[in-house]
Length: 232
Image 1 (cartoon, rainbow, N blue to C red):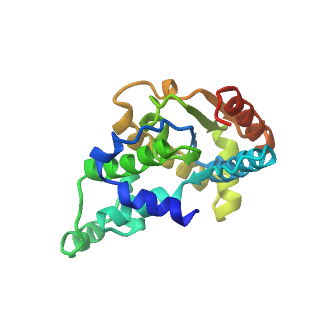
Image 2: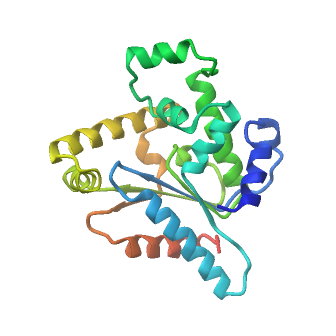
Image 3: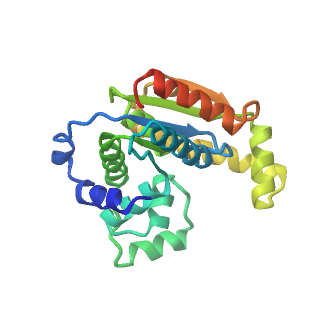
């Protein structure tokens, strides 16, 4: 991640009055995914391909991609650890003793709305800066009204996703399937805060089946659409 870009973001995140003053409207590409689909891998690959394509055309323009940086920078703004922000934003269940320890700690415990809005401010500002691929965090809903935007969802049958999770983390297929269902549910809860009851599917321009398509095929189609929409 470009340090200058992050410095720019740190100076603006959480300042809604400044967000309105930014006139750029992308381009931004968002990637949502069902748990087990390779969102980060495809996001990174897409940003690299777009940058290389522009470089071959003599254009000094870098496409960036954001995923974990959204949590890290939001945590800095809220003065919390990235792990805690991730757990809270994903509505991860905590034990009684974990909640008790947090209650009596000196750590400021923000509301769900404050966490979600801080994440949204960071995403909105990054998208307004343009030339960015954003993975996850309801970015499709947050940036849907950007003129230069393209929103993709990666999907796959749960059996295929469970096998990926099982092989990656050493879980049984049954455990991996339960984890997929639970993570999809928690991500849905987070997105619902921004989607305001609008059906999930209305926020996406295209969906790709990761079981049937390779990374190269998915990225190639996304690049073609980016070109068609004048992003390059």
